[in-house]
Image (cartoon, rainbow, N blue to C red; front, side):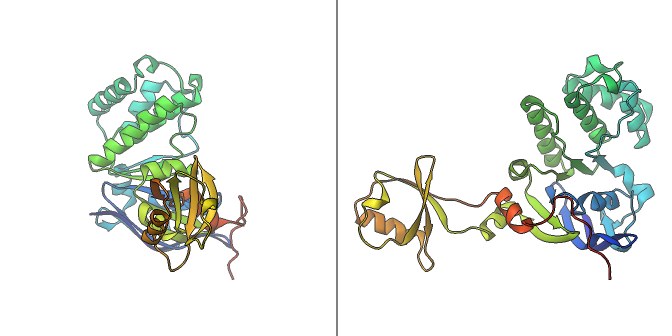
Length: 310
């Protein structure tokens, strides 16, 4: 089931294009990666999804109908990269206040807040102020206030920033659990290894345009370069005749090869067996999302100027 659909959305700021004709579809229960270099238009797109900005052109549909800010914003949880907590307010009071803004009664807000504080071992923080928290502690509080009201759509912008490995895994487990229980997560980060581990679908935005959209594994296969890791008992240099592959080097004690056009993995295996090589392992090497990201946006300034309108 589709929870969010964006059709040909555009957003201009005076004479600048921030989002330029982007369409996408997000299905319920998925963990969807929104990627792009700095200045690509990701934040502007998120702000339109959350009703902070309105698109100049195009349409946004949420939960099966046209997006209605007044009704639908309460069904969304948004954790921005720039933290939105009140530094002078006590933590427990702040969590209750933000939950009430999302439509929970005081008793509902209190019960859910206590539940999350116990889960994240935050009970002793109740009367502390946000300004007294470390960056990691503040990040945990921000996550709790984002998901406390059980939103249908959760948008997380760099959610692991400032967290140690233990708390990173804690929040990661909660993201998987929430998605398993039917919530949809849009996950935006510059850490490609986290995207590969967490997301099942991604969109890559550059200069306000969508340049890649699809399932993570299918995208990696789309950009594969016929590279394989081969574990054998001796170097390939011992082979004296024509090789059906290029020797690219070594990685983790294994040979890295690129199979030539017109040849298949079976051709390589047959070649090695016929020449008496003892094969310990044979594995295809798919490109990482980081490799694909760099390839597609290479040459883009980290803080690009938006394309000027004609």
